[in-house]
Image (cartoon, rainbow, N blue to C red; front, side, top):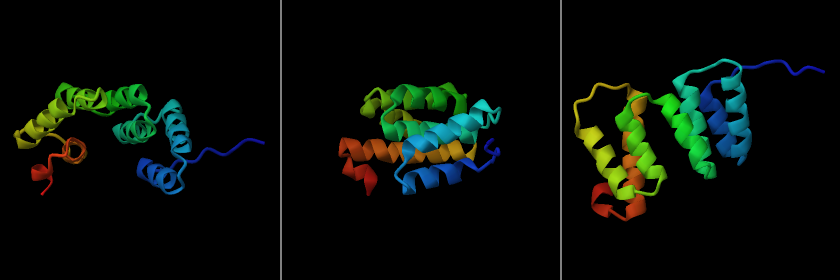
Length: 128
């Protein structure tokens, strides 16, 4: 019996995967949507976040590259994934302080990842 194709927004898939403690299933669902031709940057970003949570750093980096085409954002993400948290934190901070015109999703990523790096580095002054 064929399974009917259903579309769900990326944020709903991520929410269900996280709340249901089934991150791998969320990755599979997002990959299926992308493979079916739905190539939005939101899907790629959601895939990157779930992959990163699972520790699949190579897949996460590949998905982030597809979600954000700007090299400065991708380089900050690359440094974070490689474990260069100090450099990643500096890059995110620089992006946040710059007057670069980017979409709100990308700016939210910079903010979230900047504070995540600061937390992992124990840089409590930046977290206050």
